[in-house]
Length: 289
Image 1: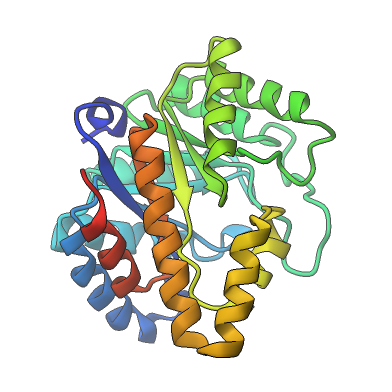
Image 2: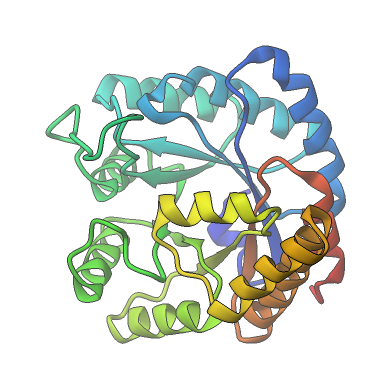
């Protein structure tokens, strides 16, 4: 199933997995994945680690998710360590496994490094990957990342949108957004893209808050903002009810956010699972899909 052909027929939930690098943790990961069949996701995205060191693991995990559990994988591919030979080999193996969907990303700097330095002049940006896949592996459906709040390295909103348009013009079929907490950011992002004649589906990313510590860490990584009233609610809950109350408020907020996005015209919602089944099952069960 190509995602571009399935989006638009009905509202949906999709999921993002962060597969463990250690094989001894795989059995627990697949148990969680099996539980998440209850959310009936349209697709599941499968990441791989910085530096591409777990790319082979990603291939094996995505294949098992498809063949053993029945999920449609969206496999991440980054510019980190990218060469034509390595990309061709990876994509050929995906094709052999019956996997048809790729999320093309620039990738993050290695751990401990502040700046991203390309390993190969040919593959410096996600748009380079998109163009290469479109020219050499046209059987794939290709998604890219979008930023309702500009990428931390973008000098301006306008520049960020220009790069977004460039990725789509290179051949991207759809966009999955970075996490955000204010639904107005998503609708403004989609509207600005439409003015620029970018009309591919934009799937919003939603993160259920599980703890106060996790939200602080995540916000520091991706430059997302959080509504002040929501953050104060989380702090108050932490003081009065502890971790369980924070988790409950976080899930309630995510479910309401997801429904507002669907009601406002989003084609579906992409839940960042953090490999936790219960929260995503709870949210999916509340949505009018």
